[in-house]
Image (cartoon, rainbow, N blue to C red; front, side, top):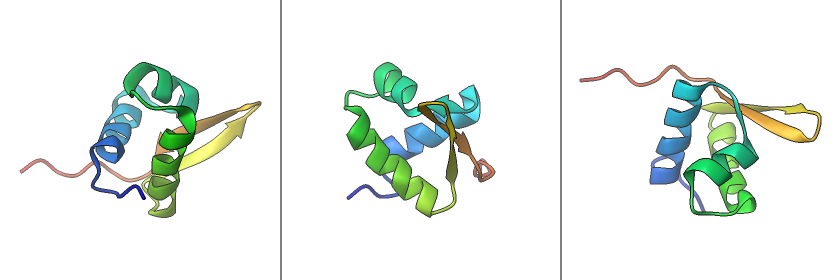
Length: 73
């Protein structure tokens, strides 16, 4: 089960913060050595926590960051 503190979850948040809203397939293909269903599990955990939201655009599911990035210490 993916956690919010996992390396994948942190990287997804960084990618959608820096690169703007992105489809699941673009995130899976370009940044992670995992298949889309595995990445979708991580995204689901982030969505349930309110950190990322998703919206359908045609056949794609576009993900965007909902929470402000943590402040640097």
